[in-house]
Image (cartoon, rainbow over all chains, first blue to last red; front, side, top):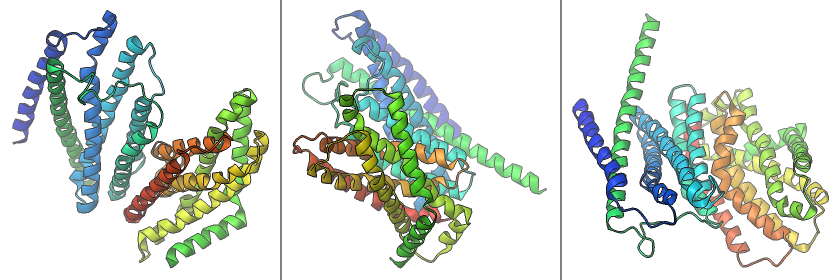
Length: 230
Length: 223
């Protein structure tokens, strides 16, 4: 069953990924901007925003898996939370890389201590700390408990961080999905949604693979231990 | 409640006998002021603008001593295990530890504040009494999260650095607001309409952080 699901996911992922790239670079109309650099830079939006959304979703999964772990004490929830945290950090890293690439031609600077930028960086730091904590702890139920607690606190903190930093002014382009001026029209909306779907499939695929890898590690460790006893 | 109280009593007695944490925190804050003075040679006006931030930098950097110390002593004496075995709610242990850390930190803040006033030549005014609730709310936010994360970090090889890594990003909202509030008070102008709602907000998040930590503490003690 497992290999079939994996294979199907991979094939779907390949098709959607190629289609997304086609849509983004060949199909969707260019935006009207003062110079070419800005027009090209805008394309990064189709990677930047889905990465951010998926980053949040990963951390939500960390939260759910952490709660589930504390409630059931099943190893698989712990593995899911770790896998998801790793992928979330990866996606937010992509956000933090693609953002400045866009900002340089459009804003003229790589980085500014703007609300959204700062809060994304803090978000990234929270989950890097979560992963580092796991590094520093020996494997076992203690580690599972402690990281589940941090996984829960971390996620509850996320909206608070965003809220607090909005205290400052933001110059980040605002929620484009909302209706009104500057909202996404026809082809752009379609391309964006398609890209988002692609990223979601990518997330599901990596999560499965990472989870399987962690399970394999477990089996391997168990076998090592048995050998040691012998 | 009695468990929490005896932990508090024990911690405070230990602190008053050794004065380990408070002294370290106080000297460290002094050092921070001195180092800032060297690294940012700025005019008095700019100094006034960065003073609120500087005060909180001193508070949170020094506060780490207290937090690290709080569970490190228990680990050294092998008490973590006994705490886990105690037939009481983990929340009670959290409460005791939280109270002792908070009280020690507040005392240190009280002792360093006059130095801060002198070094940065701030004007004393009645308005400064408004700093009491601000510092209280900010400190409680810091210690409520700090206490539980200290109990997490104490199990690692690299306790001190890990506690900072975990705590600072998580507590950043509280610190941002506290710096804002402190700035409003030290600015000397009229206290705007935003002051009290913001102060209440910090207090509300203190309650949230405390409640979460209180509920989750059982899982941390467990083996």
